[in-house]
Amino acid sequence: MNKIKEYNQNVFESIKHIDEYGNEYWEARELMLALEYKRWDKFCNVIGNAKIACEKSNYKIMDHFSQVGKMVDIGSKTSRTIMDYGLSRYACYLIVQNADPRKENVALGQTYFAIQTRKQELTEKEYSMLTEDEKRFHQRNLTKKGNYSLNNAAKKCGVKNFDRFHNAGYKGLYNGETANDIAKRKGLRYREDILDNMGSEELAANLFRITQTEAKLKRDEISSEKEANKTHYNAGKEVRDTIKRLGGTMPENLLTPKKSLKELEKEKNIYLIR
Image 1 (cartoon, rainbow, N blue to C red):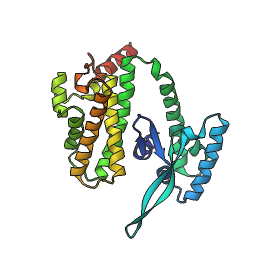
Image 2: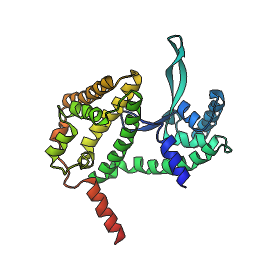
Image 3: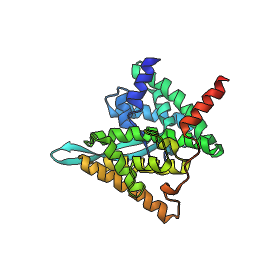
Image 4: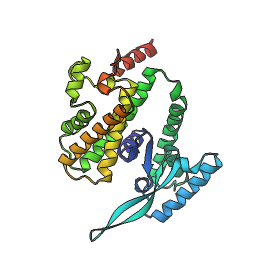
């Protein structure tokens, strides 16, 4: 079990992406390598079988297997477009179910995606019925995953000072405020997590900042820490400008919840013990 947990975190979680709407997805070519397939044509056969299974389960294929084109370098300063897929968690589940079970990574993937797919189905189905605090937990979970993915992308761009990098994003979204400024305004204790002290609307704005920054870092092939910081600031500023155009409340003017998510989690654990 420990081996499965370690593998999930180091492989499946590291190649997971989150789009601007907070939806998780995987890229087929990255999943192919994680499952130890070497040839795209062989893996396409697996994808084809997964599509059939998807259709037989009365799900729309396009909702789970989104065909996309990707530019890759082929040397001599030239590039070409190759086919890829954006895969939902359910699509990944179907793929590992149709992959070669003799591969150890496939067997681990079957366990991982079977469990996680069920968890996500419940979350999506019941989200509209959640309380505000439950929505906060949901959005906070997405921001944790989003920041994990963003940090990986930023590291590849050459970022070393991650405090400065993340503050650049906050400055753009919060009209110049750093993480420390936000914490002081909210009246938080030293080193208390500011994201744990946000409502669902404020968390959603930050999630949008996170996902848009990651996408632009990759799309523009940013290769310096300075440009990465600038990209993060601009993404935060764009989200702020969008909120303003829509007549929304600026994030710094949103109410801070009375209890942090850590406090709520502690209360929940005490209740369960009783």
